[in-house]
Structure formats: structure tokens, C-alpha cells
Amino acid sequence: MKKPPILFVMGVSGSGKSTIGKLLAKELKLRFFDGDDFHPKENVDKMAQGHPLNDNDREGWLKELNQLAKNHRESGAVVACSALKHKYRNLLKEGIEGQLQFVFLEGSFDLVSERLRQRKGHFMPPELLRSQFEALEVPRSALSVSIEDDPEVIVAHIVKALNKT
Image (tube, rainbow, N blue to C red; front, side, top):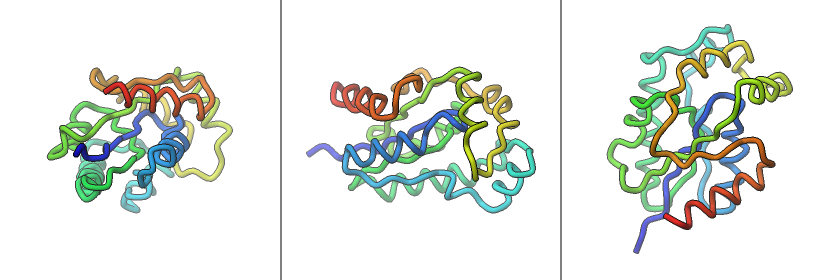
């Protein structure tokens, strides 16, 4: 019997990872985890002060998310995580390569910037968006989905694409 998927919903801050991840998890009857909830306090404080995270800041966080995914190999999971660089995705998929799928939420700087300006109560200030786009290494092997549609339409596209694999 095929194991349920482990899906990492990825993209820059403001692309809709949490919104799409929650809806996707509900649709697929999987648990949802927001990667932001696993950042150490130092990372949250650094971002809240307007400083982008570096690779060293992210390493422990990414390893923790990888372990979270490994802990859900039998039940499957949807995890929202920026996963901006190829080496970050390598850390996330370590030991679960055959079961993991990245879902890349793709959108323009202008669209995401507008969404961030409207978002309230998040530790990630809109000023850091440029650094996210600069760090982003567009994945070649991810399921890429435009964020221009409504969340329900985006999730329907993802589910349809997953059913083809």
C-alpha cells in the first residue's frame, strides 16, 4: 500500500503557504504544520527587527522540519515552509525522498508585496520580501502553481496534479 504524501508548500513570505497548506491538508485529510511555528525565538526576533535570516539561522530549523516530516511518514503531512534554496530543500527531503513533494507557490514581487502590505500581525515585515526573492532558487522538480487564483482554485489544481503522479 502506498504511503500518504508528505507535502512541503513552499514560496516566499506572503505567497499563501499557510492558507494553501491548511486547505490542502483538509482536502487530503492530512495534518498541517506551519513551519513558522518551529522557528526558534532568535530567528523570529531577528526577522521582526527587519534582518533577513542567513543559512546558519535556518539550518537547525530546517533539520527540525525534516524530523517533523519523518515523524509523519506513516500518516502523511502538509508543511508550510519557505524552502527558498536548493540546499534547504535537500535538508528537508533527507531520508524521505520518495515520499516528499514540494509544491511551489509562484507569484510576482508586486503581487506578493501587495499581499504583505495587507497582512496584519505577522513577524515578517514587508521590507524583507526583496531578500526572499533574492534568495529564492526556483525549484525545478516541484509542482509549481500560480498564486493569482483564489485559494480554493489553487488547491484544486494541486490535488488534480497530485492525482496524476
